[in-house]
Length: 264
Image (cartoon, rainbow, N blue to C red; front, side, top):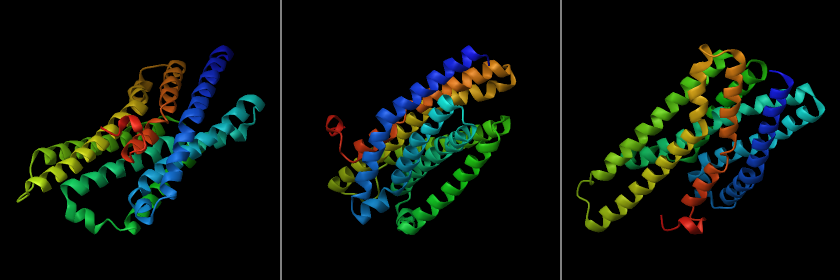
């Protein structure tokens, strides 16, 4: 890209990162504080949400390295920023997928959910996800090529398919009454199912907002020249970076900390 175009996208990247830090970073820090200050049961039940907040906080703070690269042209700071992009592209979708699967299991397969409810299973899932994320981060550190983009495309399609399946399954369970349920038990069960359905639906919509344009652009890399594809990829990525406030708002809504949404 020429100097004018690269400067333009550099300004856009700085603006998106600044918006994410000003709006998304305080919300994620608040979510992290709420979970850490809660009881052990709260920490266990919200462990995936805790990791989502941590990944977004680390990524928001890492944009400082991009500012250093733009202002001082220090190459290693750009490498540090590219390394951190794996937190946004891999850790966040995987942890959100785990949240959806957990709600799906609690509604559709409660016996299986109780079997895998102990904290050690969630910690094991988090360790596996962070290991996968580190692999993608190190790959981004040295390679940004079509192979990685298509790998991310396939990864996101699989994750989104799982979330859609969870959402549809919970919706079916909501319409189907449980065997031998009394009226009061049925109302309580339906309320829990509706809550799970809303949370999965919100996660599905927020992930769609985050990555819709990005996923639409990746298949075009075979038909566009490098400059046009880089421009489209940068714009779609910036749109995703500016939505870092959606996930903490979703958790605050679940926790009943948003006064305007307590009745929803």
